[in-house]
Image (cartoon, rainbow, N blue to C red; front, side):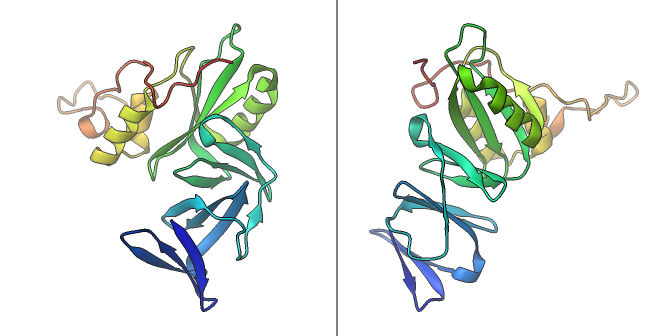
Length: 212
């Protein structure tokens, strides 16, 4: 993908097969880090390799993690991005912690964008645990510890996209469906969206983060 500013009024994104114009006025934020740019609009975000970035943007003084994921502070907001998506976070509706135990040398914090949907899997060294978890507590609305094994995020994300999951569905998947009180007199009560819980955690080649 290539991108250029046209007439100082919009960004033109071009691939081999198509092009798309994004009015500069629709761009909420642009973040640049080590030759990659994330353009975040009201409903969509785009990411591509672009150096230098020739329009107004934030230069991220961030940290690069595994799987091409990076994080950092942008004006008091927490930025997390990978090679598919990017987000600036004041608060995150669901944050998950996985692969964390007293024997772990690394662990993952998974910032979940339920609107995309997309899971940012950010690997940290255990020595940074206290500072990382402090940030999670400050920004996460619903926080889940998924145990010592990596979760099968690819399957959950695929189901969420196909079935249009909302917050209550994710909460049900992770076991926090306390907002839905079962009425013993209501024989028609069912879990949110009638969906079963995601399968038990297991690893796959796309999502597993390996210990150092």
